Amino acid sequence: MASLKELRARIGSIKSTRKITSAMKMVAAAKLRRAQASAEAARPYAAAMRRMLGELAGATRGEDGAPLLLAGTGQDKVHLLVPMTSDRGLCGGFNANVHRLTVQTIRRLQSEGKTVRLLPVGRRALNFFMRDHADLIVDHVTGTSAKEIPFSVASGLGDKINALLEAGEIDVCTLVFNKFRNAMTQVPTCQQLVPMVVEETSTELEASNDVAQYEFEPDEATLLAMLLPRNLQVQIYASLLETVAGENGARMTAMDNATRNAGRTIDSLTQVYNRTRQTNITNELIEIISGAQAV
Image (cartoon, rainbow, N blue to C red; front, side, top):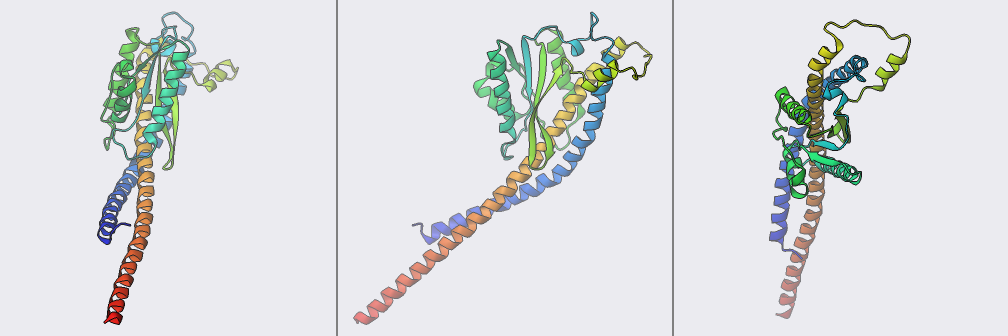
């Protein structure tokens, strides 16, 4: 049985830990409100961008010389996976879920005879894949846990992906990230970026007789050449915002659970401490009474 001194030390240590986890919970909650607002505000813009380009791409998808971001290279041999995680830990299974889904996707693609490349985003993703899949990493991006993520991060990442595509080093590019649902739920998601996936609603509208006819100025090919790189950056930026919101939500939940567990542990140790102290007092009284009776 632990001594009273050891029990007091353990209780004091856990109380200090509870103060830290409680403070981290409040900080994450404050950051979550802004991150959630940013992620939710970006969703309609990203969805509208996809729909607009889907409708615009209908006239050029089957033509020769279609942009690579739209039509791809025409092959399906080399896949680039872009797992997005946080730079820091202490957020429950938030990062592990992305790691797990990415590893499952790697194994599935390799079993189909495909070549896989990785471009980790976030220090946790980089550290994880450097252990077992270092030979697959072609580049990496860190610094995604900042209070405000500048659009330049998504722009630079989009330029890297576009450069790999134009160099013929990849055929397909897929994002792997946690889609924010609420503070307790983040859904691991795969989103294909290259070639761009046309929304089903756009295809249905093109087949409908009620679809409006538009004349584009400049022509569709010129517009696509300008807008497709921008769309790539917008989709990446929206995913980064989802990742930041999910990270703060997961950290707030994890720290809340840690604070509750610390409180329960303190209560349990306090009971053990009181019982041990009472036992020691009782033994001392027995010894005093026995000594007095012996005299």
